[in-house]
Length: 68
Picture 1 (cartoon, rainbow, N blue to C red):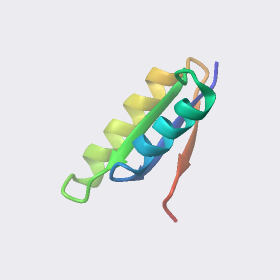
Picture 2: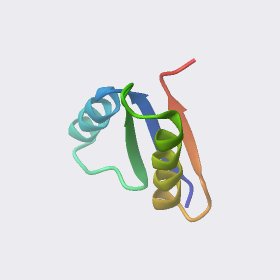
Picture 3: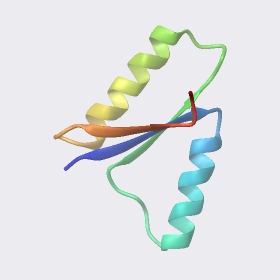
Picture 4: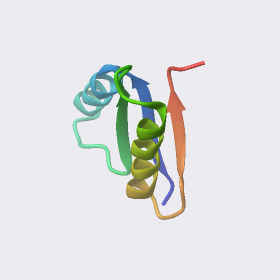
C-alpha cells in the first residue's frame, strides 16, 4: 500500500487529520502527520519524515506539504 505523509508547519497537519477523521467518521490508516518546528534542525526533521514514510506504506508514500 502507498501511504500519505502530511508535512506542515506546527500542528496544522494534526488539525487537518483530526478534521478529516471527524468528517469521515473513521480513523485514517496509512496516513501520518509530521509537524515541523523551527527549533529542530533540518537534518533531524528529515529523519522524522523518513521514518514516517517507512511507517505508512510498504510501497512508499506520497508526501504532501504546506511548504513551498
